[in-house]
Image 1 (cartoon, rainbow, N blue to C red):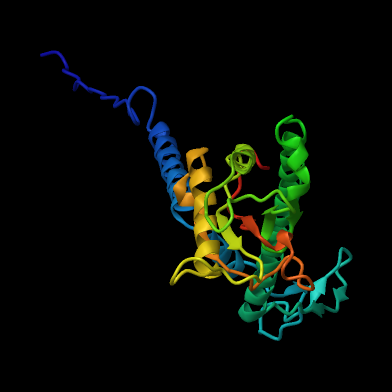
Image 2 (spheres, rainbow, N blue to C red; image 1 turned 180 degrees about the vertical axis):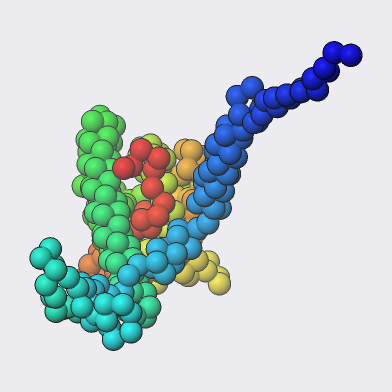
Length: 292
């Protein structure tokens, strides 16, 4: 019987790691997704926090002291001693920078804000002053260029006061604005007010209208005095402005002051004391759209 040799079978196992391309890309992708999530979370936080909160966070993470190789005595391996390039020991120098307290920073911010507000108010006040001066010149030019009203230009007094731009329509001898003892305007006086209204409508400021009389007591009607007469004349002027395009909501007040504020205090009976004052109130926050 022939010798039968044992059959030896060798199995070779081929190890495959992570499929065709391996598994390293999964780690890289996970890192990328994590980074993007952190990035978008940071954007969301920046967008959802206020300016004050951002300043608070910045202040929280701002270093309050600077140390160069500080000898702290904390018991670490170098014990506050550093080595130079030759291996020699260098002594440490500590530099302390005192941090400003929260109260001091708040006070500085408040002072800066107040200064900024004051500078802005000064700028607006100057702009308003310049605007008043331009409107006053436009008004004088409109009256002088009118053949019908140019002869009345000496009865229109325009000046700029602390209260605003003041327009005074005054009587002259033998040339009154109103019919004697009434609140009825002469035609030329009404046309004058209408001409003034063409400039006033360009301005957004509120308006105060005041009537004045001379010191001569009113006679002719019971229970009627210079107080009532001056009030009625101011209201008659208001109606002309209203009919000329000046909106009612711009009228702040209509007053009658009789002879209490004469234009010529040393001559209370003069005709010039009989007048109507139209005051464009100074109020800087209310400016025309193209003012700046």
